Image (tube, rainbow, N blue to C red; front, side, top):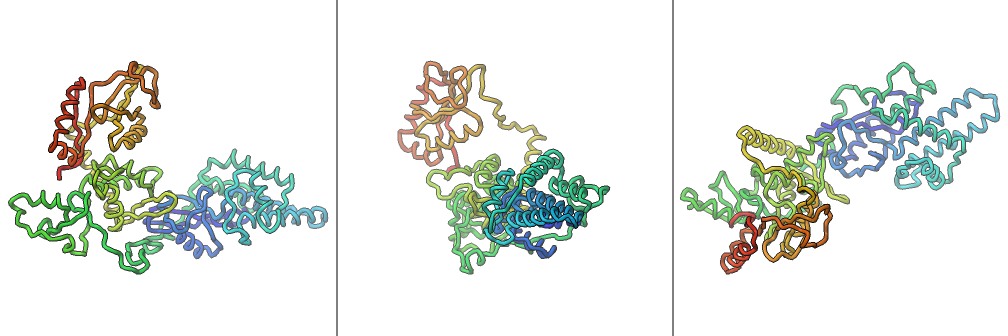
Length: 531
């Protein structure tokens, strides 16, 4: 559950009584939209609330709480420049007090009257009160930015005297020195000046010292009913019936299913290779195999195969929720990077000749079953819905149980990369230019901090060398006389490629060439599974 607070425009005014901030308890961040957060708070406190901002950026109302990665205890602002709004309110109340304390001084009455008008006009520009612009002004980090905005926005330029600019500069320095490290810096800033101006009790604790709100938990909870996305397929397609999508194989989860067997484990949809493999034995040889179109439409509860692509992506998304701070939504690249360690299925690329890759399970399995939602934008993000959280938690617990079992029984693990520096030299991976995955291998090596180059290798796909002394990761030269070849060479093949090679002399020629290369350790790396 995530508790989100909202600071409405009146909270920037030191004259406003110090009441608790309204909040919402969001049970399922992926199901609740920002616009429903705004509308709920607007109804509760009965005030104008047009936009919500986080880190001085306007939140998209059609995105979920998870999309913006809003953490527990987040305070959303109703102003794009909350600090300058608070400063203007503080100066406005100080001038009002000056006018009230000198009712007979005509000179002071004249300048305070004009000053009050200028402060009110500045607040109107900051809040976009008259709707001259579509949105409030962008974030204004400096006093010069504020002055420029007041001259160009609104019906006419807002006058700001040198005295006012000096006062605002002093307030900004004071905020940086005293309040910026508090739990709620802006509330602390407003409270201090409310005390100075006599609006609040000086003996009362500041809001920045304790919790933002200590009211009864549960008040203002927002659950699935508020802004829930649900899994209504008709709504997603304007009321039109959605075409049937290909169903992934229940066994390998990597191919589209083409067969259906009602006698296997209560009914399985299978791709042809898995169907043939499962029905080779005597017990299943005489099962009645039908086309996948004969499979029942009512889907049973889905459970991913351990360490397949859907399992890995669910674990990666759930582990993001377990971090501090939480990561409630991730981009496709984030998920691929985090999930790849939990599966042997390639999440970055489709296998050669395949039309269904590991990451395609995100849409064809997890989104269709209502476990994950995709929110588009400049960079689409994915987040767990409530059923997905439950399933992802079970997958993560299963993975942890396997890890504990391996640790208890001291099962050897693949060692972590300890370093590529050997004395004054660094190890460099050479990738053959004819290798289909050469660019991806280069990107992977770069992320791991490993030096790598693409070269035309006479034999093999991967080779390791020691670079000349003092060469770095970005080494891009070719100096054979200064390089040392390590005694390992790897030829990578898929099962299909290996099968095709065995039917000709290509496999024998490659093996003979590797034997003649003079290196000690010769490896064949075969990927995938035999079909």
